[in-house]
Image (tube, rainbow, N blue to C red; front, side, top):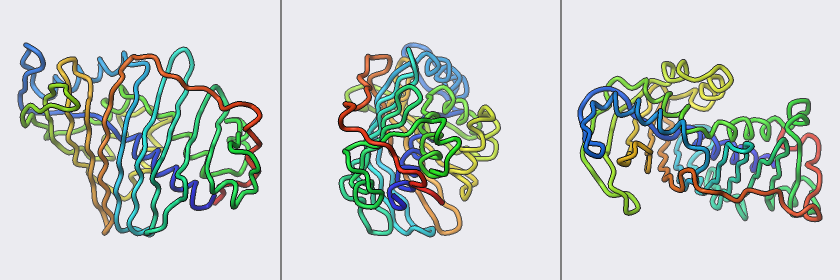
Length: 276
């Protein structure tokens, strides 16, 4: 789990930092021409209405203390009637070493379910899934699993768009089709320190931790005629470490199926799993 947990955390950190735009330039959204800053404000308003969606992502990172890394996967998210997420990471590579079989984590209610070959191999889990409650994470020493789930709970489009309004140089650069949907393409940068201040306190600390080595993040946003983000890329570099993220969003406000695995397939997550 020592290799699995940081992999999950990085995958979730990548997902947290998605969507946005913010400051000058003009573009057409439907039949209305909006300045880029106005467009992102409208995006934030529309994103606040989204209660469910799915996303595909690819994260590549180089440098740093882990060497070259890659995380590729997908997620389902819903905020109503209760918060639930289902994250599948098909590819997890750190320093040229793969996490066999990838990993999957499901949050339903106050319980986290994790599935990975690494749990069976190194943590002695005898069933396909292991579970732990959020309260147990808060009181226990599964530090990295706790960090992962804290990040998983931040998958909210409205908060992310609000964060990216910290950009002072965003501009519209044209129109493009993403997955068959016509979009407006925006490009810009945002300072991490200022973006963190736009977040609520519970999420601010996590963001600062995730991007502690990066001062400024470059982003590209492809927003549809309804001001919803269809594609986002993020990139940054600091002290020899770089990252590039591509995320595709779809299924806004459509029903999603997120359920706990069958009880007979679930065991307890051993105490101390994913510690420091």
